[in-house]
Image (cartoon, rainbow, N blue to C red; front, side, top):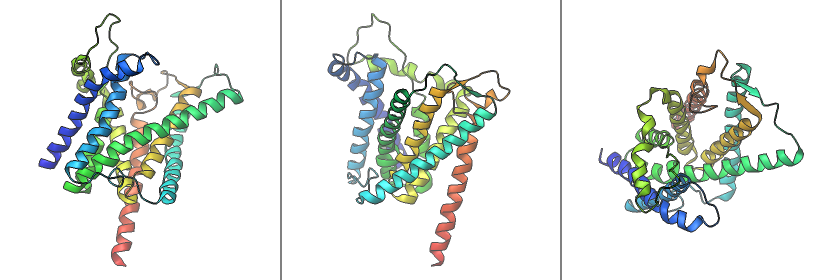
Length: 296
């Protein structure tokens, strides 16, 4: 219980530190980017997550690249990443095809298709996938996973890291009015409203999708003992989501529209079911491997 409380404390601390760091990040980057303050708040929270998770590992004398989920063998790491990428593309392709066949998604006929636009789309999609996968997996299946696993065990670690992973995706900051005077405490003052969605039952399907996705990534982490496959799966799914969002639209007039969350154009009960099936299959595969190893 103590290990779980400490784990949760560091997660909450990451959000508070991120809220404070958002203001200096705005001062630093505003001359070049001029983004909405909520964007700086999101980026500052990601940076804070990396920093706090490093401190979390240091508290248990485990601060190292290995604890963050990076192996010493670049060739094996890259191979796992590529295999994971294909795995992620497969999962997302099945989800997208099913939604298209059920009429939940339709092709966007207004999209211009050219070599230049397609090349730019694929570059942006794969870069977004790799960046998001690298940062989020370094935090959730990397540092936080390693620290909690050292103190508890596989089941608790996979459950709580997946729970936190799903939860943070529903912490959304609103845009500030143009005349707002932004200072060091602005980010903290925005935090209470950022949790507004947690009283809505309508987030259940989307939340469970992210949770079971976190479980699948946790199993991959346990199997490979690094986050390469996790980054690959994450990148493959994000990449295909970006491409799918470009080429398709949600119809809202399908009889199966309830299979997709009101908060997301792709995730919902359909994606939850597909990812759950992959998770069960992978878990059974791990158990069979353990059974064979125990016999030998």
